[in-house]
Length: 259
Image (cartoon, rainbow, N blue to C red; front, side, top):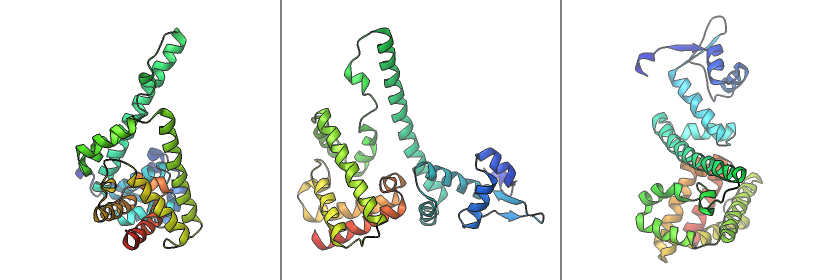
């Protein structure tokens, strides 16, 4: 807000309004995550508008499950606060729509149970689907790609969809465990997981990975590897920026040496 340029807020007021304790704010300053814009003669810390925007980003990233080192890494790589917040806002709006649909679905189910009325299965599972990513998929790879992938997904039985999600969650856990163990990205274990990851991508109709063109597959894998690090929503699947960076390095090595 332009009219607030040059205005500073004392740490006590920032703590009260943000819900972050003064002790935590001081800790953020000590580790270089959020330094005050000025420290008064009496030791009081003050924060200007730029610092408040940075604090908002920190809190949003914490809600995504990122640790402080991962948050620091994200902030250092994404210095355009407006662009980063726009990306976060898009993710939050998508999540808001999903939660709203789920809340309405659960409410309908509760009402039906209490009133002894019937309920269509489609109503029970409204909001528990993959279509919240439709706009992004169509923007990146076209409407035909989304339509083909949607037909493939909806043709699966509920049991098959559950098994697919479970396998994906297990693969993500394997990536996180390898990264935490300090395994080399070009090592045997990481490259075996990278191969499985690529085969999984190739199994999904509608994506460039399923086209059968080796060059297109290579570019697709390299592009996704970059996206895993650049987009906090993807990084959260791998326990933050460090895990995502490990996946990126492993996929890049596999793509450039095996594809």
